[in-house]
Length: 334
Image (tube, rainbow, N blue to C red):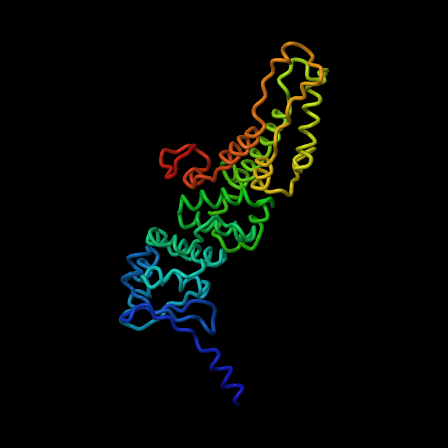
């Protein structure tokens, strides 16, 4: 009997009271032990068109304040919904550590579902990490990208898409076909699946690929001496051989490793040093004698800076416009 009583005690629902005069009780999460959330009906209606319609006289829940009925939200995650209510009721204390990416996405999904993203605009940044998602998993970085998109945060979306292209080498298809696909509303996946315009997953992949391809081209150009006959010039061949040796030591030749992140390639490029021209080798012509080479100290540092500038995050407004140019972008384009 003691065991049965203990089991029954464990099944008591958790209670969250965000308003002492709360007139709405929401049962959040699966039965039989949903979380009971007491909130202000007026605040919910002000923040969410969904709840404003739900509590109108046209729905049976409309007289909830006078009849004492409870609204069941069995499909929602209690933790995410409670965080949402804390923010709406100004009861959310910024934690010492930011929420996990999975939890941030959970809040974003609930906010999007109940149409209250606009009500969170000024305070929702507190649930995101201060820095770009360095140190988190590739899956976690993808969750932050989707959360910023759902919560309509242009600066965070730009920051996180830049970070996911710079700091991860995995294919973005891993995000599109992961658990996240079952948690995010289908409309959001226009970012990752083709529909009408180019899919955004393709934009992420192509932007990262273009940056890496640009590095290869720039390295090849840096290895070529300004000589009219490089194939037969001993000086040009010596210069190229030294460059290839240095690039091979830096693991940037004979090819760029696919497993390397863009950030790692930029760092390696910045540390690379140019090869001096060997004047002891016979020049092929007078034109070769007057060839000018960029200073070895800054040649690859400048190249790394150029790569850094090219690796920019995406504009959320361009994404929503499916790649079409728009005058309503909230971030400055290069």
